[in-house]
Figure 1 (cartoon, rainbow, N blue to C red):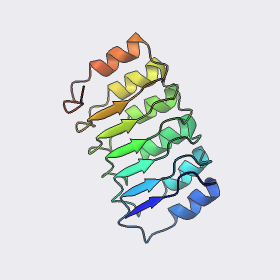
Figure 2 (cartoon, rainbow, N blue to C red):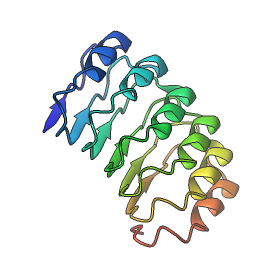
Figure 3 (tube, helix red, strand yellow):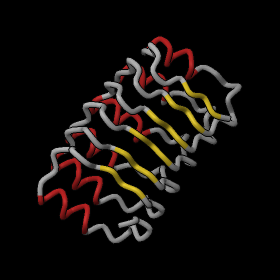
Figure 4 (cartoon, rainbow, N blue to C red):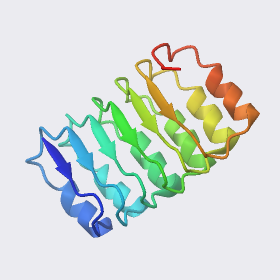
Length: 164
């Protein structure tokens, strides 16, 4: 099952209603890009424990910020997640660090974080993640990363499937 609600006026109230839906037990793809979702809306979305089959989450071009990224990374129900797109979300170093601490997404293959402000601290924490052993695609373009952050990403030995 896939739900695409991109480019609408989805906000925190809408996210709360979506998260209460318990009939979407087979939801595999949820696309909420280009809406008005903030960390408050993300806080509502991560409360859903019914979406245990979720494989793809697209929140590109919202305003979830650091706290939203931290909330997403702390969700323990989305164990089947393979792709997450958080591009253009005003995620900074703290949000990047929170994502890097994630231990749930063991099936993650694609992580898209371009057009954020992760900086070296965020990139270093993402680079230190040893759980995402299935990662094949990592997009950190235009995310304010210098040599230090780039080296941390390059030193990760767990991402053997990452395509060059």
